[in-house]
Amino acid sequence: MAGLYFEEFEVGRVFKHAITRTVTEMDNTLFSLMTMNPQPLHLDAEFSAQTEFGQRLVNSLFTLGLVIGITVVDTTLGTTIGNLGMSDIKFPKPVFHGDTLRVETEIISKRPSKSRPNAGIVEFEHRGINQRGELVCVCRRSGFMKAKPTGHA
Image 1 (spheres, helix red, strand yellow):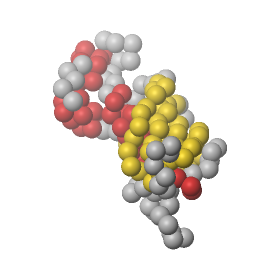
Image 2: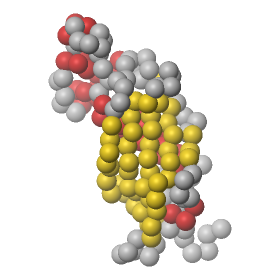
Image 3: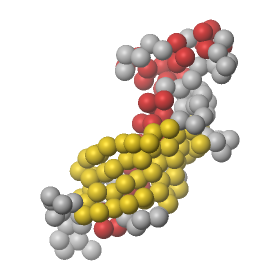
Image 4: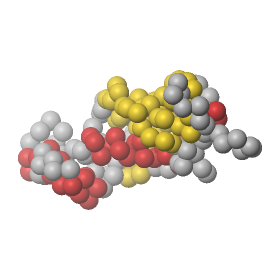
């Protein structure tokens, strides 16, 4: 399914995305190394075993990227001009290796662009939830979305 155009988003609509993803040790290690993040909470099993969590935590920026990525097919695939910003990012519970995440997206607001007649701004709230039903990530994101092309049904 292609993404939605600006006019197709309805404030209050909630998407329950079908794609889920189990986070692996390799995901966490590679992401942490590629982003130059040597935090032992992500990489060192012995260090992490001594923390209150008792194990390594998945890098929160990987979690954020995964949560937003899961939403693309249903919402913005091919119809986004770009991200304008993210705010109110929270990680209420940690993500561990082996956790499976699902995502819900709510359309919070939308408005036509003041500078471009062929675009609009949509505010999304993305919620990542683990297999235990715990909220692990929340993010508000503003997307600059294409308007429906003239003559498009």
